[in-house]
Image (cartoon, rainbow, N blue to C red):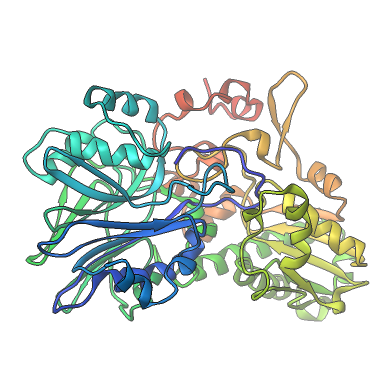
Length: 521
């Protein structure tokens, strides 16, 4: 899934995955469709399933539509003959051409010399040109420009007498993030994570059935509350006879995407604890940092005493915003703080349920921010803390702030539950250049500099603005900074990547703040 520039506010991880081996006559496609519906926060612009029944052909059904609009009823399954005991589902965000009819929906199908599979991919490959060239000798014409399809062909054309051997050989020199689910022509469910473990994947067994998914919330959807993570460099192989988990490659530096915990994953999912509790911790840490600024007189107490409400940008910022309010009130003393936590913004759930960026038209995209939220009249004329989880491009956030100012909110103090997003992501998030980033300034000479918090506040015309500190992010996860960087990819924040990303980053020689921090030699 090649990364392109989009005028989006939030970062988006591109895909959700689900897979199942069902027994006793259960239709696996029905199961993965239900699991997929719990993963729609990971992908809303394309989806599909691949299903294999014993003695039947492997069938792929996909469309460039939101998953719940593709699979509206059981009739879709029956009309398209999507019955079988092994199935996978895929949901995706587009990385280019949001208005295209064909947005490279998955799963992708590949077949070579009797080896046949359908594949769903979450992540992104940084050296895809090299691997596309490998396929030339096989005279393979791909149906898309997606790196995910390349992965499918790399596997089926690789040498080996087993799927494990072909996967090991086909992916041996691939650089990037790739959590994969596959269904094969010989009735197997395969799932794997790349050697760095950038994107999540969990699995479980239940009464003879076997399931894999991007997140535990997909298992919750089918009332399964137990699971194991598939570790980096591991391959799961499942069929009607059972399941095995083996190495297919040597594990590398563990580099779980930090934004899975900050934003991507559903708050009810679990990975190193419940995601929602992680976000509570972010809010508590942000509240402690705010209290310290006030106590050390780095912040004027007068305006703090005049703040009326703490308001979250719904919905993902709510757990952290409430924890921020509780912590700040406790740290300063409730007798000194008059502010209340208040749902001043309420998300529209019916007429405008889709995310803002789905529209291609810039004018409509700007107007949609007003449709996206109902604003309570109670905050008009008031002073507020406005808490959001991430501030990446600042485009939509800027429109929201302007809208609140226009309707009469007296004073806005912006706080973010994450550090500054300073670098593009090359591993499956739709941020392709520093030109897009709200915390980065492009100088006249073409170099990039980091904006100060004061500078960003002036641009937004808000009373104050602060991000969660990088060290505070680590503390909120119960880690030291060194521990966090040794187990997570924080490339978008600190240029701490799973492997040397400089060969794949055309801007890195122009980045002043990386040179200043001696990240680059």
